Figure 1: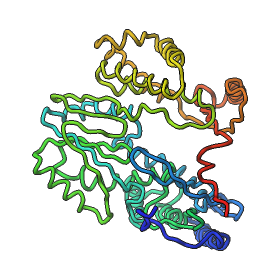
Figure 2: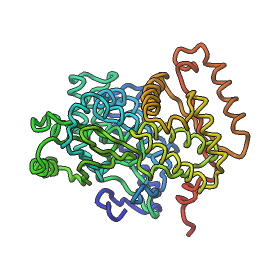
Figure 3: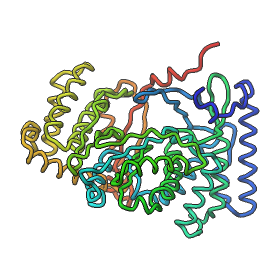
Figure 4: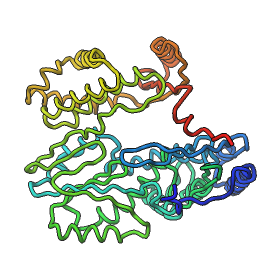
Length: 459
């Protein structure tokens, strides 16, 4: 926290919590009252966003290890701005996702698909440099006014200044200002607010950060004549692009990139014939993309709830990701064995791995041991799996996730009962039927490690 203290403002100790929270509630409600009175928002929206004291419960910030550093996690549930965040996310997400759909991905599968698209592969030559830029301060990069200005500009341009669900762009900017200005959190018995950027680990902040970065990318990359023969793609908080010009021009370009914006951009840059981006190791081998999964992605994740079920799901999903990411069948074989070793180290027997492999074989009607020893068979299966993943992702019009407290009962029986009840009552529904909607059940353990770590210390 000390490293980023300029991003936060200390308001008071928690002994004054009631005063601080009530002041923020009053300011938000006064603005909402004005917007409703002047007919910028409807009475229904006003009532939906209006705050009561019992709506608010501030949470402590806690910390989790992420690769090579510890990052703060801000829980925004029941925050002063939670209602604003939910409303703005529902309002803006369809529009923003439409703006970003060609330039931003958030999973390995989509990244690999884009690399194999003609638009990217045609830009790759034996001498092409691969460049990865990680935005270290992705969520605290932009000043609040800069966030409002950029998003307002892009929404107005995309919508040709037309309202979104009868809400004008100017009104959306006012609501964004409230969200950015009045978000609160607790750290070591003190109440803070954000001076810079937004809280991480929320869907809405990712949406806003991506759109703000899109403005920057458009001005510096896509509108730059020097960059017309290159390929650019954003993967979460990292930028990937090709470079077919000289190294001298590349270094000049990087200097211009850092000086382009008024916002202080902290960039970690990697370039060459091979780079690492997120979970993927990527190389340019004689003008062809070669990829494999980083070994750090093979570690079993920390889970709560019902660990065995979660690790069964992890095993199957990681096996699919291995095939998608490994362009060479020998790499796949080597990393599949590593995955099984990690399971053994974590206390899961060889029978556990064999059982999951057998389920995989039955589901895809293959023999994984034959696939991994034949280059042609492997590439055919990999191609089919990439197509299957695309079809599967488009098969449902919506996905609904339910969380429940798990307390040592019959998991499979409960899951079956929930799906039966859902199918019974929604079978004839146009959008909620089992054919249109996929239901995900996520168990939350009563004794979460995060809850224990974030628990307030006894005085």
